[in-house]
Image 1: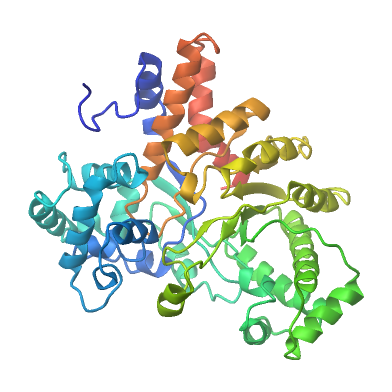
Image 2: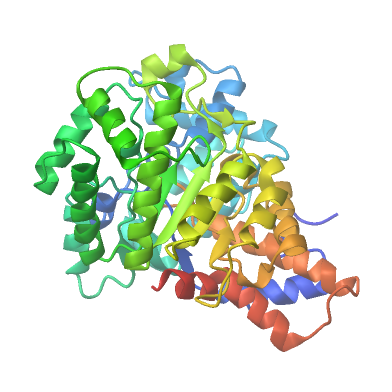
Length: 467
């Protein structure tokens, strides 16, 4: 029997252990997509207890605590204490055998707090007191967590109307030791069906200095903000879409749809798709001009529990995998940009693992000599970033494409302790490559294996994003 999550956790062969400990483990981290708050980095925030850094905003954990029959007041309620919330998580965790949260939580306890046991109600006092003591030290201030995690670049998630105040201030700190860069997330400008769309466009008009009255002025306002983001180090965009749309329409038709919405009228589903297609195409061309990366996240059905959405709002643990992501529209959308030579570097993430093969074949249609792996399948996302999901995504990509050019892992997290997800990913990567080597499917070529592991862990992303 192997020891619980020891140094060879998830590594079953000599080759896997060698590749991880001698190469992957030592590589720095590029976290090119996350949801952490840059203000907390600038202020070098310190947390009073582990609940604040572990459970605040983490809807992954909230879902599982709810699944354990815990009252909502002990999950998101303001009337319960941080200790009570922590105890609810400690009581839930032992039941999560096979769930990545079990392993992630213990990787974080090991790395940042030196706790080698396992968290349960019996050990809750010990873990609470240990973590509280450690968090009181400068060693676990936000900046030192990042430095001690060997993180070199962080890309946050930022709305086009954001002032980027904290990114600008962070850039002025000479000894920071890592970069914090904005990432452009224009979903509010795209989601024409939302009731607050017109209100958002009014804010965009104010911030950009361009009065948005039609589609041409909307594009001009967004271009103004794109240039502002670009001037502050941004080279990454990200879109959260239901699926990748392709419903082409004339400029006049899109203009009429936008004016209709701004006049307070409803737009049909078909009109929504036409508007979104036109705006995504226009933005894609701008990304190409600026040499940015376009990330497309799709395949999620959001806010399924209306009662809880009305109570707590979005991103609180009530999203699920969608079964609708038409591959033909995805291919047509990419082709529409490619045919004019304006397809940017693109990463595709589907929340539905059934889309892996389709994505793997579509990306092969749009590669060229501008950069290796110009169009990529993103790492296993959200409900898929577990042991089996990561293996399945990498095996599919390897079978249909070029795994050696893969950009590797990102945290997609709101927690500063989540950098161990890169460790979790790298262990799985080395185990998978080790299996192929040990079974004779790939040669035991030290130079080639070293390059594969180091590139997927770090080097590919640095080159691809231009960091």
